[in-house]
Length: 476
Image 1 (cartoon, rainbow, N blue to C red):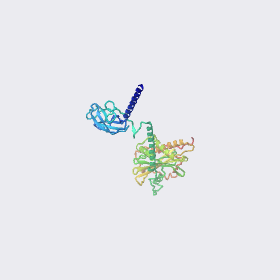
Image 2 (cartoon, rainbow, N blue to C red):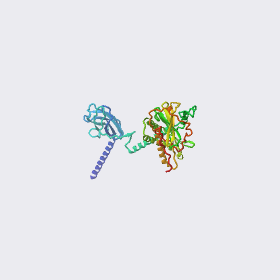
Image 3 (cartoon, helix red, strand yellow):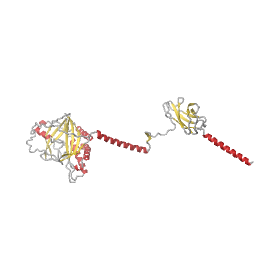
Image 4 (tube, one colour):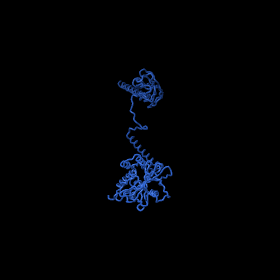
């Protein structure tokens, strides 16, 4: 009897276990749709609100289509419905519903529910009687639907977040490489597209008339004009020697008025002439800077201290360009500075002055204005100054500093405006010079290689002051 009871209990337990297992298998074979990530859509059309959500099949593969409805949670009124295609296991679909807001007040909070109807599917798993539920604040007409939960937007560039330190370092490095490439491309373009600066040949605009008697006053003056190099006078001078200088002026009588600086050239020379390989044509940027300073000093005269302060940066650029081209073996050669001037015909004049060395300085003994001849609308003039090269036992650093100071003083003298005379001189009424009586004493002094030309004397009618650069001392 006991054995029979035990066998019946074993059969009942086995049947119960089999029934529960089969029920679990059947439960897993049923598709189950779940609402995920229900949220408002900020890109709703004007006059509507929008709801976005996903439906995921967490059960088995569905064989029949279903439907999903959006209803008002308070009344159960249906807003809209959409069909759900059969979803595979784990498949997710996104659904969007638009809600008209005409029947609601702006700012009113309305709760909406999502209902899924799936034939043969599992019952709803959402809280309450809906598979999903959301509350939306009705926006004003013309404003987007406010979202209940927003995340701060991260700044991006071409879809890449720029808050990452590695991204920032990469952007800075890429920008630097881009600037280097642009600079390199611009240098190549300048080499092929921008022509190198030129200086060109120059012919004096005051032609020589061979028909004039060289022993007459006009003939002597004509011969002296060929020896004028610039507006400078060399100091110290040899007693009873003579020197001529030229002063380009405008029709207003001011020095360098209406004249423009169009070119600058630096070169070295020896007993055989200019050393061509050391010729340096200055870039247009430096030429324009000196030209602006010339016009400024002509229009508004400055003191020598002010002119020297403005001329010193230009001298630095000139010395730097020269030493970049000159070889170390040629630093001892004298340096020639050529300035090319240009003026409009009819607006500029050239004045010549003849000086005689008396005592420690120069004395003016003759002055005349020459006739200018131009083949076009422009008249070209040329200034040539001479500077000392590096002396024996002179260190390179001291030579560079001394050359810079000498060049700054030379430019200061050229730009200095002497006092403007109240009355214009009538050159025809000047007392003529008895050149015949001075024939035995007149001599054109040849400029030695180690002598530099300094700035113009402040007042042309007075003896020149000793303002030229001194020959560098060898006792160092």
